[in-house]
Picture 1 (tube, rainbow, N blue to C red):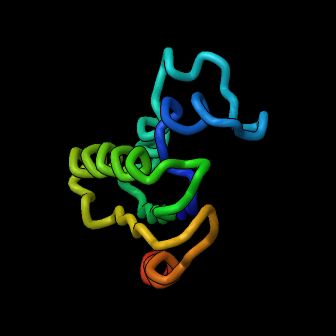
Picture 2 (picture 1 turned 120 degrees about the vertical axis):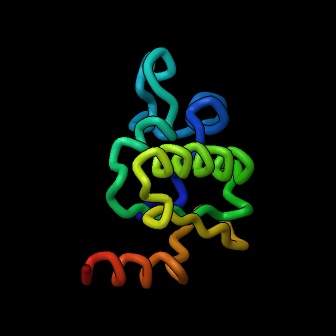
Length: 107
């Protein structure tokens, strides 16, 4: 489960003030955040993103998730990846994410 982080380096870490631990020098020479998130396919992945998150802009979160979903589709696993956009800031939401985890961890 990724809560309040999946975005693009271009729109978040690379263009907004973030903690130094988010900086990966030269990362865009190799991959964007959605490429890295796609590395866990076809294992289940749930992403939640706040509409009012000032650190991870919602448009880039949705864009990044759509790219991850494309990667999952290549693996025939589009049913194992979901995103919930919630009406909040940079925080844990869990309303759909926790049941998603319970469902997939019970398998």
